[in-house]
Image 1 (cartoon, rainbow, N blue to C red):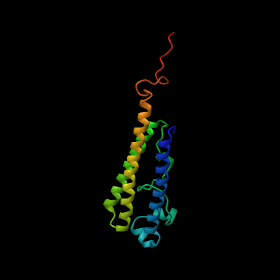
Image 2: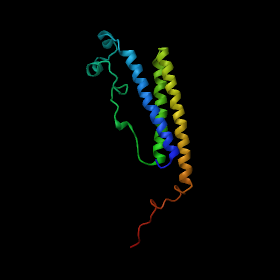
Image 3: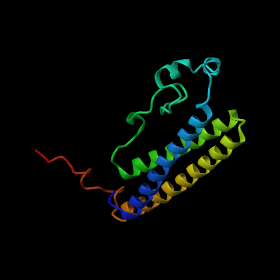
Image 4: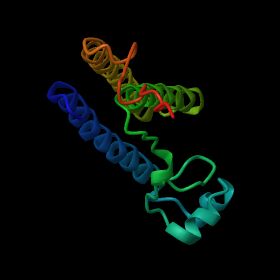
Length: 155
């Protein structure tokens, strides 16, 4: 990231997102640590339990483990910031969906907090996108970029 102010935004949000993983992992651990074998079977978690016991293993609700394949990066400032914006909205929607199913007030409070932070992150990424776009527009990046628009040499 060539712009220090955007680098700071990315560092702040990235650091906080690691905290979100820890918070969600802690919630899952607290909800599952004292489950009996019968409760595990009744909830349909026996396959997970065989592999992970009640340890927190980052995966989607369908059981697909988290991998770096979930990260979308092109190396283009505008494209990557749009992807960051989309990722924040996807996270917010996931938290909305959790709130539709969850009736535990302590969990709901934590999920509402995380959802609110995703909204703030979306706003910060939007600020970063505006800053980058202004800097690139000042160089006439989109109207004419010599490195992309070179004509073929005539023969």
